[in-house]
Amino acid sequence: MERHTRQSADIPKWSALLVEAVNKPGLIMKAYSNFHSYSLGNQLLALVQCQMRGLQPGPINTFPKWQELGRHVKRGERALMLCMPITCKRRDETTDEGADCKGTFTSFVYKARWFVLTQTEGEDLQPQVTPDWDAKRALAALAIDLIPFDSTDGNCQGFARKRQIAINPVAQLPHKTLFHELAHVVIGHTTEADFADTEKTPRNLREVEAEAVALLCCESLELEGADYCRGYLQNWLYQGVGFDASAIPEKSAQKIFRAADQILRAGRSTSERSAEYAN
Ligand SMILES: [Zn+2]
Image (cartoon, rainbow, N blue to C red; front, side):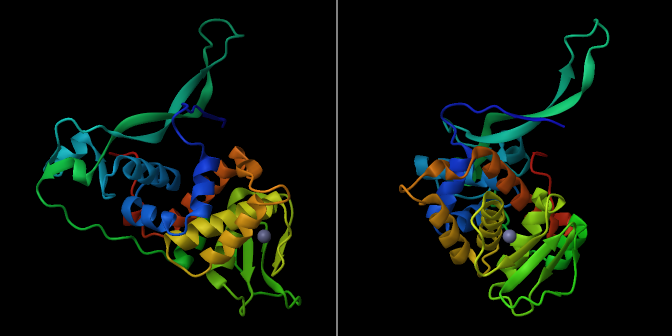
């Protein structure tokens, strides 16, 4: 399956949103607590738009969904824009007419369809509860095994091999290491090589990707380790000549957001893995 990203000029790139998240402690936490039923990228998009327009962040829904909930959008309110995947049929132009369709691909479009709570009025809403996250549930849903830690390297915090991960029982930041190793598997790094992560993580793009996923997960769930990840990533962004926002390529940023979403959703109970685009 192929993915296309269509992005208009006024929409920030994923890499720019990621740099925001790295440089602004608490941003992801705020986005997650308000918009956790949406993908992380959309959570940040929603939060940034609320901040730009001076709107109080809160539950977001489409116009008809608000009506279902007994509220209506106030006159003159402008919708927030989120990114939606759409499935397109591929046409193969080289073949004869009739043999038109060669599978499907996913494309992304930006639609202005969502309104935040303060743009609406009507019946009171039930307060939102941030879903709890469970490591065992996540491992099972992602089909990843947690195996005993068998490395004799005392500095090694954890490792990932194929679809197995291990965490040093005395790891300094066990949650951070768990998310980091899960990220290596979910992004697909372990089909390319095995990863043993020491306290001194080598500087390469795959480590940046895993560490960024760990940042997004730790901060969303308010678990210890986000500061460490943030330091590592800032260091990467400030290498050599000074701050370079393009040090994390757009393609990596997309992988990072997708992997963090997968890991966060996998750890929720089935009833909480609500479909983002259902409304
Ligand atoms: Zn690593």
